[in-house]
Length: 473
Image (cartoon, rainbow, N blue to C red; front, side, top):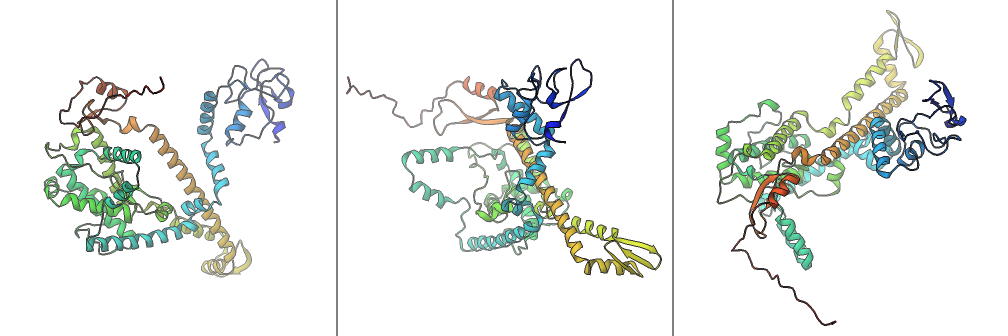
C-alpha cells in the first residue's frame, strides 16, 4: 500500500468507517497510537490538521525525526517526544533489531564480532595471542620480572605529570576498590584461590595452554558445577597461609592478561576483537588488608554477599557452559540443519527408485541420492550453507543487541540493585581519615552529613588563610 493511500480509523461520530488519508478530518479524529495529544495528530494530512499525511511508511523502526513528524503535534515538548519514542521502540523492538542488522551487516567490525564466517578466524587469532601471552607471563614469573600491578607504568606516568595532573592521579589512587574488604576473610581468600584455579584450568584447556605453573595440579577443568564444593575448614586454612594472597593476585593478573577475564568484576570477559586490539593489564583488586581490626565474614555486608554470590555463580556457569564465543559459531546447529535440508531433497518413488528435487536423475538407493547432492549439486548445498550462516549471523547480532540493552538497563538501575551500602569518609577526618559504610542514595548522604565532625589531631595542617591583593585600589 502506498503511503498516501494508508487508511486510518474514524474515532468519533462515524463509527468504525474507514476513510483515506487525503479526505481530511471531516468525520472525526484520526487514531495515532503514539500521538494522543487531545485531538490526535499534528500538521498535514487534511484540512482539519488531525493527522500527518507525509513521511515514510511506518515499518516499526522509524527514526526519531520520522516518528515525531508522523505522530506528534508541533507543540509536543522534547521530553514528551522522547518518552513516546522510547515507548515506540519498546513496542517495536524486533523491527529495530532487524533494521540494525540490515544497516550494519557488512561492517567489518560487526562481522568480526558476530558473523560466524569471520568470527572463526577472529577466535583463532585470539587463541594464538593468548598462548603467546601465557608463555610471556610464565617467562616473566620465572626470571622474577613479573609486575602484577604495573607499578613501573604508574611511576612513568607520574614523572610526566604537572602539579594539577599529579593531584588528580593521587585522588584516583585514593579511591576505594569495588572489592569489599571482606574479600580478605580467610574463607573467602581460600574460595577465590580455588575458584581461580579451576577457571584458569578451564580457559587454558579451551585455548590449548599446557603446563601452567600457577596451578597446583588438583584442578579439574571438566568438573561439574555442583561438584565444586570444598570443605570450609580447608578453605579457611588455605586463606590463613601467608602466601595465598600473593598467589591469588598472580592468578587474577594471569586471568586478565592472558584470557581477558576480570575475576572480581563478576567474571567480565573481553570481546575477542577488543582483546586483539589492546593488552589488558588493569583488573579489580582488593584494598590493603586492615592491620588493626579483624576482617568480618561477607555475611555482615549485603554488598559483599551479592557480589560474591554473582562471582561464584558466573564461575560455575563459565566452566560448565564453555566459551560463549564458540557457541556463536553455531557449527553443530548449521550442520544439523544442512543435513535436514539435504534429506528433504530426497524423493522416494518406490522401494528401488529414488529421485532428487534438484535434478531429474533416478537412483536405486537413498545413499546414492545424498552422494549426488553433495557432489554434483554442491553449489546448491553451498547456497543453503550461506543462508544458514546469515541466519546465525542475524541471531548473534540480535542477541548482542538484547544483551547490550539489558546491560544499559542494569547500569541505570545499578544503585538500586547493587548499592546496598557505600563507603563515605567521615567529615573533617582529613585525606587519610576514617571511612564508614552508609546506605546508598540520598539517605546515606544525609546520614553522613548529620554525623558529628571528626577532628584528626595528627592530620597535616593546611594553609587556610586568604591573601587579599589591594594593588588595584
